[in-house]
Length: 236
Image (cartoon, rainbow, N blue to C red):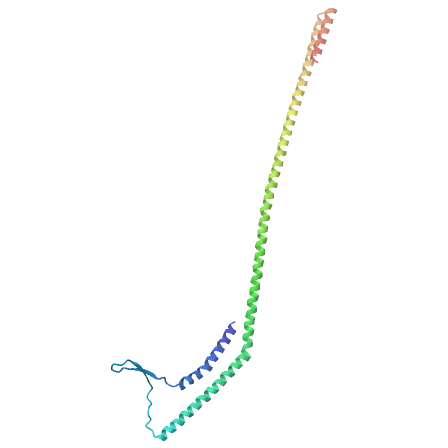
């Protein structure tokens, strides 16, 4: 890009250098403009009057004047010749610049255009990628929200199941404890009954032994035996 700018600057500078001498020559050969002056007459309107510059009369003779005119003609021819060659040089310079400089300029402009197009294409690709990434991120975010909802619902369901299991286990444990307590009470009651029967039997035996020792009659022995049997039957 810098080389392209330098080349354009060189072309403009060359054109300026080639044109300025021609402009200077034309300005030098141009006649001096007439000067308009206003003449005021008594009782008349002001009217513009064109005044030409005074011609400086030469004190030389007619021969000298003729020689001066020839010299001016020579100078004019030299100026025209100089202008011609300057124009030729300028045109040659323009042809050279167009022939050898146009292609680099066009190539530079085309390369710059290609680079700009590539940058635009790259920016377009990046923009599309950013848009796709944004859409994917939004989709993932929505999926994460749904996944979080599913996780919360699953956790709540698992908590309910665990709650029911714990309550069922507690109920079962309470039933087991109740059954164990009832079994223990029943066992203690059976033990108490057994001990009571044993104690009654022992007492009956002692009473019978005591009566036998006192020489009970046969009738008394029969009565005691009946009473013992009645007590044993009542306990059972």
